[in-house]
Image (tube, rainbow, N blue to C red; front, side):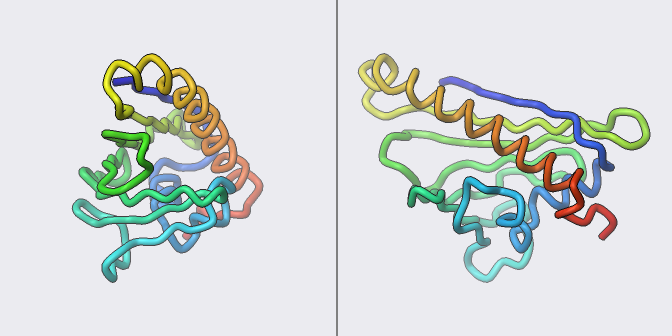
Length: 155
């Protein structure tokens, strides 16, 4: 099962970045990939066991459940319902301070396509390419929103 990861240095404190990355009230301010981002079942904040639904601007939706929630260092979630092409899908965010005012932000996907060897042979290269672009763009969107002041890191 492929694991794909990207990392960027963002000029803001670890705690603020962790909080902003998991704030569904602000998610659409920075995540230009999505048109819907919400917590499910009346949850008011992300935490272990909470489900969230995200839908891309292309109409592809996925429901995930938080497996871990460890402020201010990491979160991980797994797909509970999503695109037909995935047998399994998970993602995570990690935050590591760099000096006094910056943080390395890591964003990772781990997935298994359906259809056994045929999915691995035919779908995996295409899916990996799309997901690498998504990782790169999400990190860039997040960094730009934080460093331009669109997201308030002082909250």
